[in-house]
Image 1 (tube, rainbow, N blue to C red):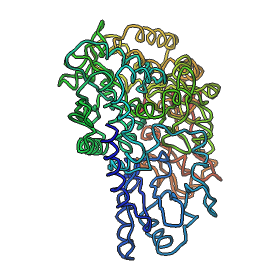
Image 2: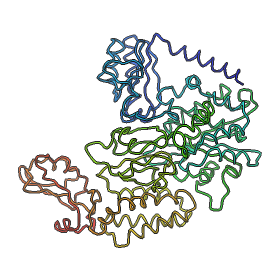
Image 3: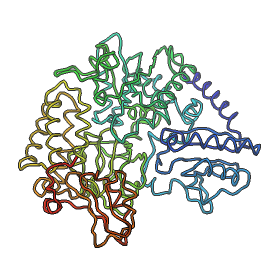
Image 4: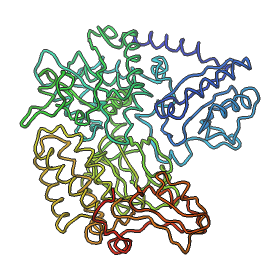
Length: 639
């Protein structure tokens, strides 16, 4: 097998060298979904036109997301005699100018550059990996993303790809599972179940047919970790699934990907075709006698299909909803009642490297209870949003303040929500917590699949809890009463509180309902749905009490508890607010004090934003006393 693979690798090196000539420049364009959303394809066309105009021969290729989504669109240039230089926030115009300056001329344009990848200093351009955004990051899952062409199997093989598969095929299944167990790898889908134990259970299960499923049904708001791996390094996931299939005795696998990920699906299908063409997938892989077929299955985007039994039913063509308790594990009775191994994108992506570099290498990263790295989609009120990969055990504060750059616009940090819509919100005093499965769980949150949403002091925590609970209510399959009705009861209470109609005892009722739902729901969605409410009550109870007792929203967010008004003594009648109001709720003559019609105001806040600081005539007020003095008591919505 090794000889067969060496022949394949030799062909890949030859194909790569034919494209990557040393005498011509290379231009790498970040064209994952985030890059395309900021114009990467238009930039690529503009660059190609400029190259053609000047008769410059260059290799222009697409790469995945390197993680710096805040800096998109990204263009990297490798010119002979120079290191690879990364340029951020590109536009077609800037890219055209860059080609003229750097490729026609010799000016690397430090004013446009973000950083370079060279070992030597380059005047005016810092080393990219010395930028604060990479402080403490360790690239394992993301090591190829942003560096290789995800649509080229040759580039993946040249980075060591599929050598982990070769080592696996030369081993016994039990040896592979033992290595995975020794590494301490835990599932990156959210639950953190020991991967080796799950694989061993599936190997022991009796059955003439077994299946491997990759769960890429990433449905958390603000989460895009799995999508980025599939778009930037699809072969790593495919290789991990083939190894898993060999280890448990499965001959067929399914990639369960939500249909909202068209680019990931396209690149996966292309990667599967390439792997089959090289005999790394399909029948008699590398002459080993092992067969493994892989198919992409598009999910309809139901959040509950992240649960294993619901996902299995969906593939079978049934409505995706969790099977009732008691139920056998999918490793014993899964797809079409056959033993089925189900893991997350990131879990499978790590396996080839564990086989290549050894379990001790992986176990040496992170903590004893949570080895390896964690990938987070860092979003929300953060200076540098994007993907980060850090060793398990890193403090939350370092991720948010050092890597993410902290909260922008001079606002103060308020909370971080981890674990997606079923996670918890942690305040500033909890930022010293290390990031790992068990610590976050004890704090009332969870690791989840890797979502991390930062909230600033303009955020109402009651409103945040309502937002996430509304999401889980909508996504509930509805088959069990605690989840179907319990979450709706909780949501109704939160809506009353945000509307100024909260009552004494509401907080206690939310706590009681939340605990009951967690104990009695049949699947993970219901068991974790109350987490945002319970954690915000635990850490921000004073905000709930302000809403209930004082009819006050401290963050000035809840529409029924706030009022915009203009101080007639401060208003100069400049008309900025009047012209900016989208619903014409403001009236007044030029150079005369203006007024806001409360019954027409939608509480958008634009008037406050545009009012010149030197006047400060527009103000937002809250609280029972202030609202009553303006003719409202906060108990009824004017709309």
